[in-house]
Amino acid sequence: METALENTLPTAKPKWLKVKLPIGKKYTELRGLVDKYSLNTICASGSCPNMGECWGEGTATFMILGNTCTRSCGFCGVKTGRPETVDWDEPEKVARSIKIMNIKHAVITSVDRDDLKDGGSIIWIETVKAIRRMNPTTTLETLIPDFQDIKRNIDRIIEANPEVVSHNVETVRRLTREVRIQAKYDRSLEVLRYLKEKGINRTKSGIMLGLGEQEEEVFQTMRDLRAVNVDIVTIGQYLQPSKKHLPVKEFITPDQFAIYEKFGLELGFRHVESGPLVRSSYKAQKHIL
Image: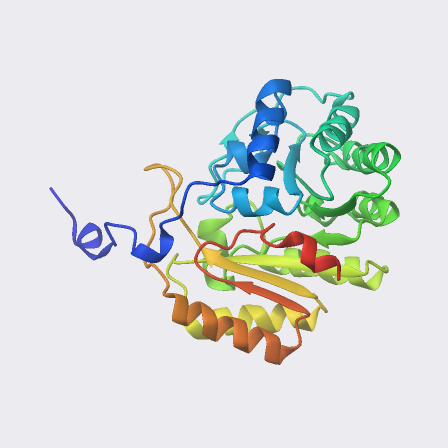
């Protein structure tokens, strides 16, 4: 029997969320390399709708530190549980993948590893070093966890000095406890503040919409990000990974995304990517400019 809540939830994706299958010579070439060498990109494993566009521009996203997260966020499709032991060869594997694919701009992200004393930060810095050594012309964005705001772990990322350091607040303050169960809104803001204070050139954060937030709450989240001098913000539509995850409460229209983009630019963000299909690494290669 349907509940009152289920009757209020959207049932079908609107036309603006439908995407064409990726095509193009560059995409086909990279797809072949990924399959041939069993390369691990979150673009492919996460079925990102922008994969063809990003790959065509020489950008790809890689996830390190395994595929099991120690946190259980209500929005995320990555499995939760006890992670495997750290693969100390992973930095070289990622660097080699970037070389094989001839990636111009790489985005590196990871699961949360709260089980590790260093939060995984040592593998992070070794990965950046390996990429720099093997791919000296490739630019980098690191999309990092909050490392529980342990400064010595964040300092390793700062020492590596990628062109962009990103950490997502994911949602508005009111919904954080429900959406990011083991995370804290203010802790994320503190991580972003600290990164900028310690000299990171470009900081970045992302928000998902459609989880029940109000327009003014989105505006306030953007104000909060600018207050800690975040340079770049991405705003996209949340899509439910499975029936076990939080439901989509609303499909945000392209016109509303345009309102958020205008507001963000007026606030002073250097770049605002706002649209239904926008994801954290969308147009990432532009964000170093």
